[in-house]
Image 1 (cartoon, rainbow, N blue to C red):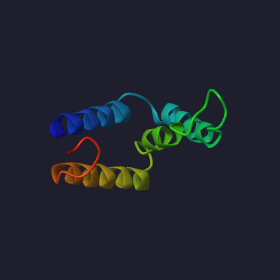
Image 2 (tube, rainbow, N blue to C red):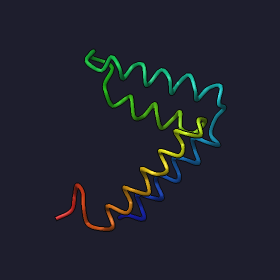
Image 3 (cartoon, one colour):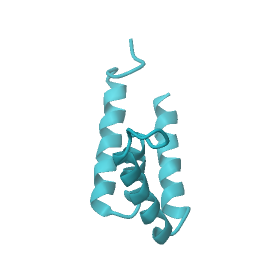
Image 4 (tube, rainbow, N blue to C red):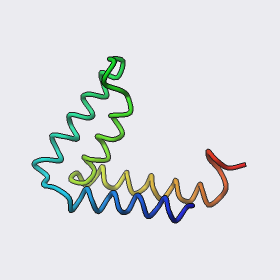
Length: 87
């Protein structure tokens, strides 16, 4: 299960980095973050903020560093048996 999660994250990362141009990804990421700020509106939601940050992390090095740290932290935590879905 853990390997599957990590494989999906890596596939998403490859798709983001190789699957488009920065001139396209950056405005989309910014739009998601701004849309997430207005999350109380019916169509938009607060879920858009982390999605926008992940999209932006493909092109912004300090965001990429934080995303990598989060993935490492999450995988270590899951291996230790802590977190949702664990009994």
